[in-house]
Image (cartoon, rainbow, N blue to C red; front, side, top):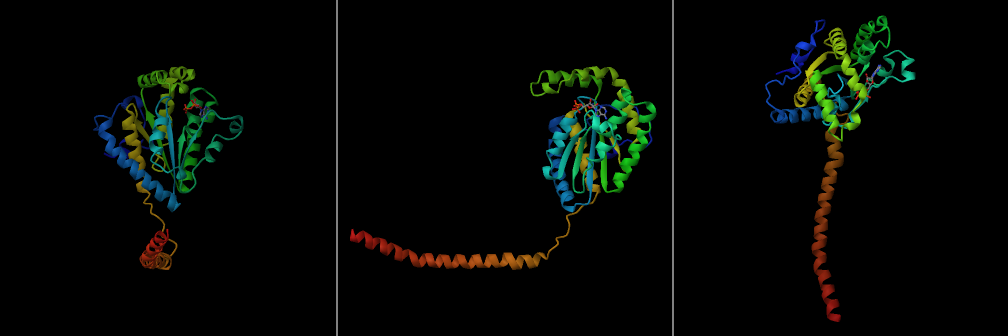
Length: 307
Ligand code: ADP
């Protein structure tokens, strides 16, 4: 099953999130049944990232968006744990600072776009500027409504510059969100995440869903697709995201660069000689040891006699 096809938002289609089942888990029964697949994808991701880093030609931007409690942190933990920290990073976008607000909304985003060879994961993104900003009227409608086209033009320019973009919306339902908030209450390791405003935002659930539907349908293209990931089951979410990442990276047909030196010459010049020398040295050493041993024991025995 290719989740890239199944979950991709087709360009220009009208979306209805209420009709997309967040409980969907493919043909899999439970977490145990995906362990092998997940391991396989993690290993493949590690390999692909290593090639991307070495080839230094492509870059990957992964955008993660979700309602509060939607599992962005868990997804990042799962996906990033397969990667070499040297070639990847995570950027979280919070409420903009005064400095950021004094610039256009893409200013803080552009600075964080990955360089060639790198993978960057956005935990929230420029899409907040057509989500929370729209829901709470932080700017007038005639400002945020122009941003879809501005985002499309921006992402198009990035892909022309060799950056591959994939965007995941982790789709949970309102009951699952409340369950996750309750779990936080009962888990001392997660209590720090509790924010009263997250509960307050639940009142705007429908407005957010509408804002997401617009953003996802207006800004999904072959060059920067949105994927809607059924995310009530964390294990299925990890599986689908990993598979799509692997498929996307494999599609780049990356390869390790050709060595810039003559390998045979290097082998002969440095390694064959070293091996021969050390081999000869070893033989000489052994002979020397063989010849020495009896002398030493004689000396010792003489000394013993003297005593
Ligand atoms: P998270 O929920 O991602 O773990 P926080 O609890 O710190 O992290 O929330 C970050 C907050 O920043 C969210 O409420 C989000 O809506 C807000 N935010 C992000 N980008 C913007 C933006 N451009 N304008 C206004 N608020 C934003």
